[in-house]
Length: 297
Image (cartoon, rainbow, N blue to C red):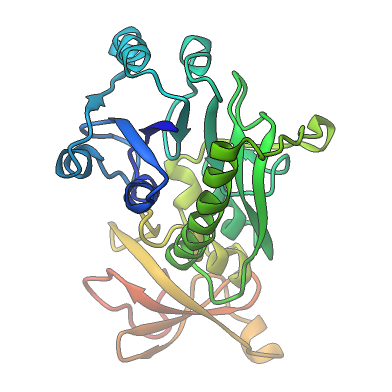
């Protein structure tokens, strides 16, 4: 089976490296990008393809027709598109005999759309999914090829959930790659009535408002931790990144009388702050000057 691989993020790099190592997989072409202005986890596949002596094409929005021509000349049986910032046009989707397989880290049809790892954590979900599907002209709407549920535990952040999803996805790839070769795979239509779409995150979504509850701020910090750009606040006219927090349990009037954003204590470089509801300890951050106790963030 002739495989062309499309991708340009860390997940793409890991899964392509995994595919190259499979005896039954014949990766005959790679489509990637040279750079990305908006993918925080961007990773070009150019070097990996070169090291494996696999022909590659550097795609841009301005050369999609050339990309389609290059792909036709490769004559793939299937295209794996894992980690790509744009929808593929019908012209490209119709080239491979078996279709184009995409990936979305949710339990489709739920939670289609943008930034699925970030939103799952920011919303405090306890479960997500790892789904491979046959791409169509819609966003994450094609027939499902393989899906597994994935638990989100309280200690998960973006980095740990990213790694957890990657590990599960690698197991799925081994399974469905063999099924595609043997023709024993199944296609399951999505129930579009159960679908919802997450919107594109913008910079304002990463801004901490200390009037938010401690739980909401904690989830936001988890969601935007590495490899993503980090939640942030403004202190002393400087932007400060908050990378790790801990929920604290303080009861009664002792804490309720304080306003949101008040620093209740400083322990070495860690900062305890009152939120709109509850108390949070800031553990990892980029404060150049540690706030004093009883000051305000």
